[in-house]
Length: 357
Image 1 (cartoon, rainbow, N blue to C red):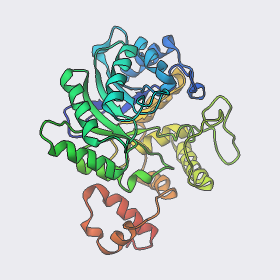
Image 2: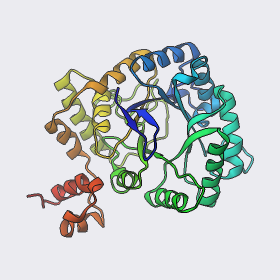
Image 3: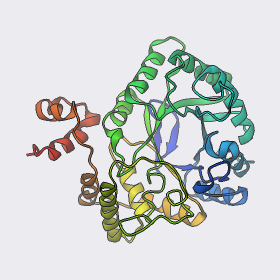
């Protein structure tokens, strides 16, 4: 397993992180899986044997039960693992149970620590942008949690590019504030919107780009296609509402490309999707997940797959984002002035516009 520094920090993390949304599968998360404590412990064992020592959860997942299962699975070996959790989604009727306020964050961290059976988190995320809470309040609260030893680092998730930049800039410029070291964002071979702003912004700001759900919340699990319907025991067959799909035909074209490349490697569609995402520009660690030990073994094995440039390009070209303004203008008139973090995307826009020499 490869280890990288997470953003502009000294925290070294594996390129693959195990996501625990399938742990428990209760309280509205039944479609995500039902990994219980005994199997979760075996999956932690498998991950550690493969060099994956970071585990990602959230108070949202099964409304805390995922944290409880993960806590049981790591019991007795806290010093061997890195643990992430998140808060932000509204989980109760009380008006302060959600968002990025001091009230919610301080209450949530204590509840998460209790469920996980630990006295600190290695990384704690604001799970969503809260435009009603002053950014300074959120930054100060996270900074104080670090000072108290309840968390080691913090990050944000599902922010826009400007919200990320605002948060990071204010934290950097205010004496005593500690900025976030990473953002967790949605990015798949089909969903490429993060290339417009989020991926370059993270790199330019020194904020690590951690990817959630590279398989598109089950869209790219190999069981969905032009003539294949998602099984009922999967998220997409079990009434899961996410993600929004821009164009169904475009999705099928991506799956076709993944299937073609998978056949070249005697691999599965999920394996190729993971491999493609992890090797993309500006991408840091990616969060993989599995419903069972067999899936986990397969997903971990994808780390060693090497795509040719032609195979990479085949997948890339199918769902390349449209060169929306100002990208078409910049690709036309100031391509050579692009920042290093965005040159590969600008090159793709030029190709889409027929300007590539």
